[in-house]
Image (cartoon, rainbow, N blue to C red; front, side):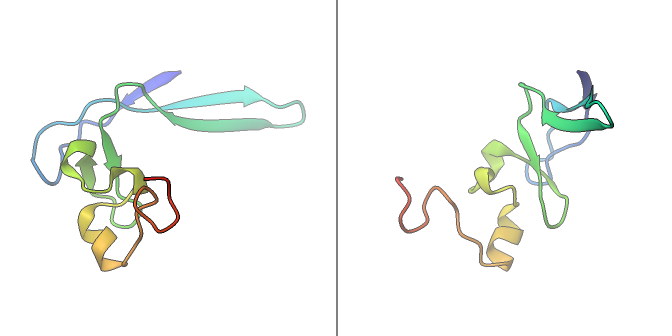
Length: 87
């Protein structure tokens, strides 16, 4: 797996983020598959809506994949606190 360091900074605290994403390519017989996975040391999300980079620790809802601004803007629900969750 190739580590792809982001070189980015958190849009909230302005400190450097760690880790990144790796790309794994596998032969699938008549084609191939590509998997993009996080490195074990990754400490940030890239917001699914606006692409802001945010440390997990700087986000109120890191498990959603959205920054706090977009989470509120789109009136999303946190799977950890949604009605019917085990939290």
